[in-house]
Image (cartoon, rainbow, N blue to C red):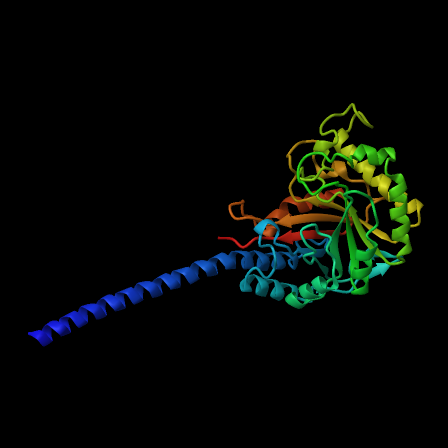
Length: 361
């Protein structure tokens, strides 16, 4: 009896142990499955993005630039998971994505064949912490060189040409891509207290802008420059919402909306200042977001456009969800929405100046 009782208890303990072990294994399995699914969503988005770029559905797209940063825990970096990094490396490894710049008369032309590969290689939260190491780290990470390195020239307290940043990028063998950001602080939304489009038009900053242009010319290297990033988005103060919005009687042509007209003329003024002061070594980009915010008749990209006589390239931001919970769209779905508008605007080459997506749960 005693032996049988002992064996019975032993069997029960063994059953409990095996059941507990099995439950634990199942839990680990489903946890891993969930993690794999989470990571594969971003990886799949990246994979599909590269496939769509190679599909020839967007023949005017001649450059791409990944936004490699994790601002506000957005997990946009290509190495936010091993799957995502592998998808990016596999996609960009194609011969379609080229790393040699086609330059003529100090202007960047579209590549003879293929699509340029470039990046914002995580130059910090203020987007201007430019180092050779950060560029090299990104190239090593994705196993592909970049044509340009993209960074912000924040005006903050003063308008100054970013000589040190340009020198660092040029010394690393990359083209400096300068985002002129007319903002006195890093806050999003609302008008800027200093740098309004009207003040730029009126010449309030011409002394500083003239020196900016002279310094740009004195680099004697090809520069890529944009003014007013993602202008059709009201998260930036140069958006029409903060410069006249849908009014028509406060500035310029009474048949045009004041907000967009002021931006257009401010951008023209800056380019005219650069041309007048010898900065013919600049390739000018016009950069919009794929979707206008607010979605109003006065906030369409064509109304902001300075014109083909001023602009060399069109640029667009194409983001999947930047945080969990945001609406999910494939890269191709977004491009299918914005590409016709860009193509109707001009036959200039198009650069996807920013694209990225978060890791999704």
